[in-house]
Image (tube, rainbow, N blue to C red; front, side, top):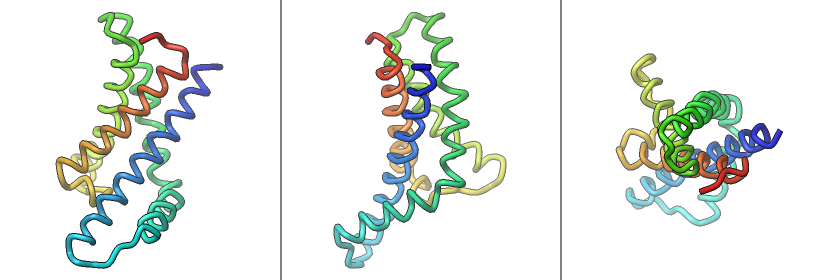
Length: 142
């Protein structure tokens, strides 16, 4: 039960961070174009994206982590690398894989922010933090 709870919490963390990072990239692009962007605008946009992406991006994140986290557990067992590191790596790869697979199979980039390497790395960072969080919540030792 602990692992299931940790999975759902990690999925939520990955979704919220990845969505927020994407929104922040877009808002930064607007600011670079001399568009006035207030803190309230940024918070409003993040909230709007969290709600707007629930039916599309959250399921993709959930599926990606449902594959990556057990795979990371298997790698930990076989390679003996620290669990928190290997789960973080699994989450990192999972969120990057979402975007690369969408682009390769459908020819589309779901988030404008992932058109840059930095934006794609931020998505991976959200997954990495979620993987680390999963390992932490599931009682894994460092």
